[in-house]
Image (cartoon, rainbow, N blue to C red):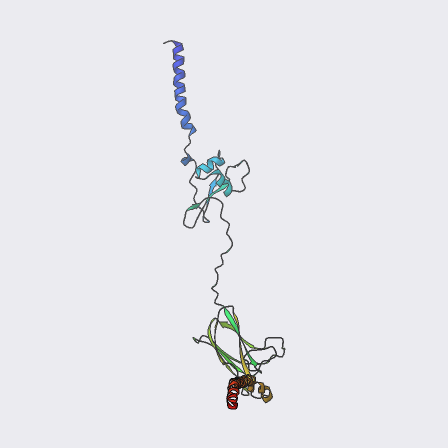
Amino acid sequence: MNSKRSIILFTLVSLLLLGVWLPAGAAPDLQQQFPTPTPGADGRIVYIVQPGDNCIRVAALNAISVEQLRQLNSKLDENCTLVDGQELLVGIVSVAGTPTLGPSPTPGLPTVTPTPFTGTTEICILLFDDSNGNAIHEATEPAIAGGAVSVTEVNGEYSAAQETVVPADPDVYQGICFSNVPEGSYNITMGVPDNYNATVNMDYSLVVHAGDRAEVGFGAQSKDVVVDPAAQEPQATGKSPIIGILGGLLLLGGAGLGYYAWRSSKPESKLNSGMFKK
């Protein structure tokens, strides 16, 4: 065989063998080069950097992106430099055992569960001296002490009673108040002192809601109040002007009828007198 052909044949065989060997050597068996990381007691999955590792390789081995690897390991520099034996966090196992990729979530603000607002109300009651008897509380009519007032919820869930007093300071509210009263429907009953007569109904029904402040007024007039007869004279004679006017109209009507009758009879008298003369 020609030596030149032998050299060419040897070269081709060598290239063929080299071509077969290079792919096999360039594709390392990833499964054989590192053990699969397992979660620790705290649920963290840690990878130990091996010789020749880089961020792309570590991310591919753990099925995450390089960006996720950087998020999990904030201390990595811009070049993502790794050191043999370095511990890298590559995942976090949740309570259910499912790996959670990405940085550990930051707890948010606690959720406040609103407490149902049952609420209370306040009922204030005033017993006032209704001196003019018009059943309306006026600024000049003071409070009356010694009245007995009771507040009762219609279903019996609340019941309380107090006695009315007169506060020393006239600028403050003159009535009494029942505080921390549950919302609902109430019957309010007022008993006046012995020397007073009620000028309004002493029983009152009231519905209050949480947060309300209700005020109810009851009027009473002292039994010692003396009615001036002279003050009532205009009321007793209030109809007399009308009667006088009607009487005057009747008189004028009668006078008109009399005059008409006189005028009607006058010509007839003259005719009769003339006939008499002939």
